[in-house]
Amino acid sequence: MPGRIEDYALIGDLQSAALVGRDGSIDWLCLPRFDSTACFAALLGDDSAGHWRIAPAGAAAATDRRYHDDTLVLETEWRTPDGVVRLLDFMPPRGEAADVVRIAEGVSGEVPMHMDLVLRFDYGRVVPWVRRQGHDLEAVAGPDAVWLRTDAPVHGRDRTTVADFTVRAGEKVPFVLSHQVSHLPRPEPVDPFRALTETRRYWHDWIARCDYDGRWPEAVRRSLILLKALTYAPTGGIVAAATTSLPEQIGGPRNWDYRYCWLRDATFTLQALLGTGYVAEARAWREWLLRAVAGDPADLQIMYGLDGARRLPEYTLDWLSGYENSSPVRVGNAAAAQLQLDVYGEVLDGLHLAREAGIAATDAGWDLQKALLDYLEGAWRQPDNGLWEVRGGRRQFVHSKVMAWAGFDRAVTAVEHHRLDGPVEAWRAARDKIHAEVCAKGFDSDRGTFTQSYGSAALDASLLLIPRVGFLPGADARVAGTVEAVRRELCQDGFVLRYRPDHEGVDGLPGTEGAFLACTFWLADALHAVGRRDDAERMFERLLGLRNDVGMLSEEYDPGSGRQLGNTPQAFSLVGLVNSARLLSGTSTRTSADSSAQHTRRDAG
Figure (cartoon, rainbow, N blue to C red):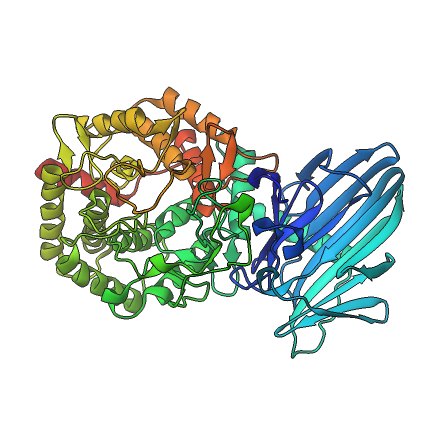
């Protein structure tokens, strides 16, 4: 059976990624891309769905593990009665083909080792044809071909490739698994030790560009490395997570595919990258964003494929039982076709952040933004599915209106501060109209809080973003009231739920879910905004304590069981950590959009 979600560490090559358990087993890997089919899918079923384990014979969980310095080279160590052995796992930044390198290294004594490799293409469904080529093994099925090169003695047993060998102090036994599409020639095998040196150098050079100098450098640096590992290098797109269908409730149906790029993540991600010195990555993300949203503004999607592809049909893999029997296992995401008006504001806000950072706007990019604004001017009054992609019917979600306001506010700033052209009076009028309507229809004066949607009694964690986007200042009593209402009604053991799934049938799905980690970072930020800085810092420290031993955070957390839930590692959670650390460290600066928003707040609502 797979380990707990927090038992996994990540290795990756900036085009795909693998999850490695404490027991030395790779239980998840899709090749050649994040969104390709998996050749190791034990994470969503059992060992027969594909895995690759290297560990001391008879051993279970490792004694210790860590990443080597500021890299994505994983070191897993076992202390056994026979001695100490270390396993190094990494994926070199992509060259000719995708490679996974594993090196068993003797530290002391003589440790008997065992390897078992179960390759199962197409998410565990396809058993490849395996044959020996000299000292190497080749596995082929349909479009996929994999080669294993090692000095260890390997042989087949019950459709599994196994090896038994001994590692002595000072010895190193390498394994290299290489993937290529089956109609192309075999790629040139990488030298494992040279690849180790080059991989370490790559990550050392990359993290050296980080200019965060706040109070939590280790947590920020590790989060940035994991975020970089979720980047699809050929296009600059950043996936929401490396996995699909890890459940938001163990045994429940809230299992989604997150191996795509969400527009909503753009602003938060750009904040984190630009705020820590990664302008090149921010520029690549902006260019991906502009390519993805190009076309008819009415056809804007909330998410796209790694290369900007629009078709992400959702289907289930019924031969997989799901993580701890949490079914169905889903591939694709039907939410891509939903109407979520807030993404227009997120895109416009993200591109505004890029302008503020000195990433010059192009004429074509600004023309596209004007087209988005033109569409939004006629569409912002519509009900939509909201940022949580609910499947229980469209509503007049307050957050969607707030982000529509933000889109027009950033457009006004673009004209007034960056001398771009556009119908600024019309944009200013739309901005003020939205602001007045939200304050009139989205605020419950009896309870002193904004609500999830017009006329609703429900709350929503997205309301915590009202001061962040500049809609109202933290000093406004309506913001303080909303923060207190969220703490009172949406917190579970101090961690924030997105909303109450069982309230008003908003999401149309059975069951519940865990506390959403990004929302809890938002609460820390909102507490800071209303002047409760000690409370904000205590909450942030609690969130840091949820990271696993190698700094990973998934999407959600279950305070009752003390377990991480949802897909992992989650970019939204990692970005939330970075941005909160910057804010609480005093390294997060205000933008000119905040100044223009202050003027709006004096005149509206």
